[in-house]
Length: 532
Image (cartoon, rainbow, N blue to C red):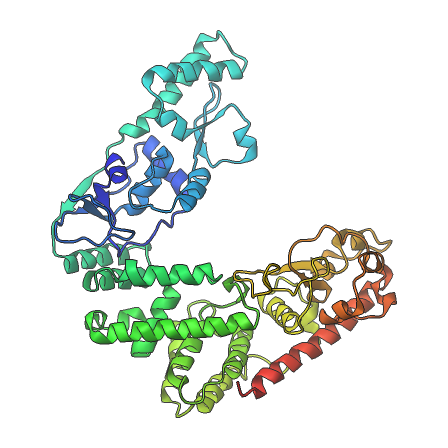
């Protein structure tokens, strides 16, 4: 760890970032305490390679961690020592808190490791492993005495002995032996080693292996181009898995999303850079247009896989008839059908083949839509709005028609999805789903409403942020907060005041479901017939 902190150990750019969950970090601590083997750390000794994953440093003799980065980083988190390659303080602080593994130290119960929560934080029996391993032998006795005192057993020699022994056993984690192996192969060989090590198990996906291969032949590309573009998308609200971009790149260049089918020569060819530029342009254009439709966060999308054919559609037909609204119409229907859910590689490649063989944009779109005709009906049906609002597609359509209507927030009086300061689209905005009839109100009705019926999409409105104001029935809070008929109509709320009474809830959701259904079908039709 000292070498990782000092920069004497670093990670090459083909390594992914830290992906372990706090639970895995806790399990690592448990393994170290039990003296279980935790695997070999593979180091690469190369004076010629100088392309770290993050910004370059000045450490001239760094050795590169090819296998064991997750374990090394996790150990650094446990000990509270930030490794050289972790440059972002904000994310480090988040992981630092979440991975502060606790251990139960008691004279009457066995040692147990757990993750922090408010109850354990306030329980003197639960002690931070980080605190123990960073305590000197002299301070350990003092810590044991303090614990005995907090347990109300001051002066109990046996309790002190047991507590001290357990603290000492945890402290010895810092002296655990880790097997290290070094290689000094060429960069291409090391990328292949990384690939073979990680494809034998389940540690990484083919995307990670492809990135490793690219990094070995396009030095600096991951750090200087790939990761910054991912970060730029995330800043705009689109937090995509790297596999979405990598498979789009493969689709743009080779008409496949199966990365293992792309020959190694491609990654070091001139076509690679050309295809990357085309990929960036396609992704940037499509996501900008998506933002204009109100999709300001990737969390709104039921399927990110469906974006890949969308990006490729634009790339092929951007100069020959591409119509965004029509493509968006297909995208929504593909998301509705769950076209690319689960293991989607085969389906994606089938649809890419349709796009590849199409003579024009209209032919491509008709072929793609034809593949959905058996999966979903032509029109959105009213009963879908009586499904749980947490259904991702139904919720997306609810939001899209409300955004399209120019709906205003009922308290802030600003357009939903727009920044209050400058009236511009609010990048990263995610809607607040608000029950028009509050749960508590419906449950207190003489004949309480079942939870399932309370949470239907027809009872959900969209606001800018969580509101505590609307806790009474609508017939009370609407006049109280002067919510106009215009604002209500923007959310497709029936204007009949009788329907705002709790005893008429069932009639309300039926009427609103009808209004929303008509709006959604009109929205679909507008996209389908659009020429822009």
